[in-house]
Length: 306
Image (tube, rainbow, N blue to C red; front, side, top):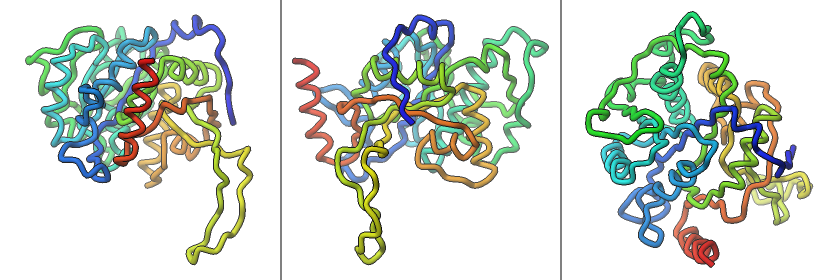
C-alpha cells in the first residue's frame, strides 16, 4: 500500500532517526577486483556517497555501517578520513543481509541507544539476554567499533566490544525511527529519506518503492506462463525501509527464532504481523549490482550535476 506525503516534516524532528547501512556485499557480479563499497564513481567510493547522504540529512541522529570482517579495517580507515559527524559505529555483519541487519540492530542498542538512557529504572526490558540469540553478536564480541554519534572517530575508539547484556528500551527509544538502507544505493536523495521518515512516523512501517513499468508474468519451471500479474498493484522495492525501533528489533528477533529469511526489511516486519506501506522512491535510487549498473550510475551522476 502506498503512502504519499510531501507535507511539512517539522513534526518528525522531535523523533530521533537512526540509520543502519549494510555494506558487506562482495560484488561478485561486478567482476571487479574490489568489493562494492569501494567501487569509485567519479573518484568517490560508493560507501562514501551513501553515508554522506544520511550524514548531511538534518533529521538523522546516528549512523551505523555494517560491514564484513574482511572489509572492516578499510571501512574504519575511510571513516576516519571523512570524519562523518553522525557516524556512531561500525559493526561486523553476518552471513546474509538479514543476519547483518540483526547484528547491526543489536550493536545500535548496546553502544548507542542504551548509552542515551538516563537510568535503568526509567527503562523496561523487552528482550531476553541478547547473547542467547544464535548469530546475534559473535562478530561484535571481537571487533565492532563504536564511535559515538555527533563526534569524530579516533584510534582509541577502534575495538570497542559488544557485550551481550539485556537490551533496555526507554520510552524515547520506542519512539525512535530506524531506517535500513543498502550501502550500494549511493544516489539516495533527502526527499526520499524525508518521505520514508514521515511514512514511518504516521504509519509505523514504510519503505521506498517505485511502480513497476514492465508487464510481469508468473512463469512455471518449464517456461510456461501461468498468469499475468496486475501491473498497477506491483511496486519494485528500494531502500530505505524501516519502522519504529522497538518494532523493528522485535520483528528481526521473531524472524531469527522462526528461521524466516525475508527478501527485504518490510518482509521481515510483515512476517511479524506489521502492516507495511510504501512511499515513492526515485528512478535514481538504483542498487549497484552489475557492470551495467555502473554505466547507469555515471549517467545518473551527470544528470544530478546538471
